[in-house]
Length: 611
Ligand code: M6R
Image 1 (spheres, protein in one colour):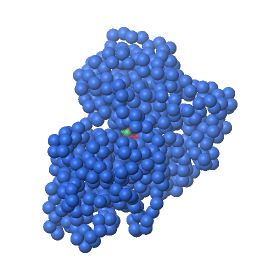
Image 2 (spheres, protein in one colour):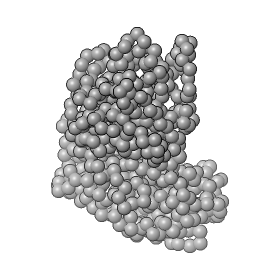
Image 3 (cartoon, rainbow, N blue to C red):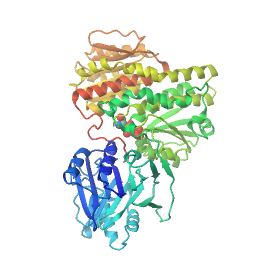
Image 4 (cartoon, protein in one colour):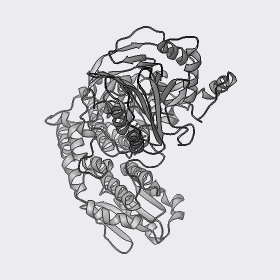
């Protein structure tokens, strides 16, 4: 988590730093800060705010902050509460440091630094880096070499930027486990946690690898590996559209991203736009061999991406006939499992920077599983660079902390994977293949029709805003959709929400149901509908108020305590893609009624780059 921006340029970089932070706020927004060097000899100015970047901007304006060299940070608190004293940059002597990640051995370092006289002014792990570099600077006068030496003492994950008061000509940056890239501008060089922060000054990016340490100056950049060997990294022209990260006419990014789903799905499915048959090559050059030889599938992911994996398990087992397990990445990496080298490991991630997912992939590879696939929304992400195969969802940048269009595009990608696996395993005849492709191509239009239900959903939202708890029910592949609906509601409206497979209700959760407990049911017209209806009767008999999302052709009747909203189409295996949309809209409108910060809910960050 946390976002970093750094700049050395032939102009005042304060506006660049602030604009970069604004773009990186999705990575954390507990506090923001910057430091700039100005004048000759340079004077270091540090500004910090517990509020958002807007407040930091006001501070910078008030004191006319300016300088040609600067570093900046937006924080998601890990060590130490959100407060000004814990906000970055942290200083030691004339040094300023910003950091994304976690220094795992910070306690031991803190004790040894205290023992030689350093006084700590924050509770953060980052402050040890500032003092450690300052200490080493006493014996190694070159900042680049000093930072490199200090890195050898650090354990954990970091992206770092360090600058020094008496040398405004350069900034030293380093990457180990947390994303960091360099930007090559017309009038200077830059560094940031992601490309969106630097599009304002350049499209020419250089992605650092783990273990890289770099020096940026106005004139150039220099990268070395941990052992000091110089290394050249490719310059990549970023394809990210600057407009794509603007809010436009929408009130919130989440709203924009919900309504972008038809386009996001159409873009993701573009590669099968006119196709009459599916090619494994959709997943990469070696896909036929990698996918075709897989004996089973292991899906690793977190949060919403994990829910996408849970839906895919139903598809992969039923349609492709391949055994599939789905694990929460943070659990998988720490348990003793039984590896099979011929397992296809599928990692799913919007950001491609989720620390737990990356570590779970490494763990699986370490256990001998080399058939790996990433389904990811960020082509330049760490995850994509670490798997044998990849499928890039083309949702476009997702800024709202609550994941929406990333989820539906992940589902589209996973359905394509299911069909390709089915074909490779001889379970998809040509006629069915054509039909399936046709159904997939219709998904964007079908989602568009579901979005038209917004006014009715908005009316329902009023009934939830004063509730403390909600239950979500689903069956089969719609149980993960119920899980996703519950996650969305708790994440942005702070209403406690739980999801259950509806058949499980009578084994315990039914005890929670009374007239104060609204129950939301995902009720497509599938083979389990009659069973689900019986479960809903169990709720109604205990006074629970039901909110049912049914299909156009379901015989679900409204009556007292039973509200029914019909989706325009009944969509078979792909209906999970449609049924999640009203749940996204419901959460969004409940959050609006409650007045929460929809795009930046409390305590969260968009990209979870710490363990
Ligand atoms: O970037 P990723 O897909 O790997 O992120 C995984 C989760 O952190 C993410 O889905 C999270 O659960 C969302 N905030 C849910 O809306």
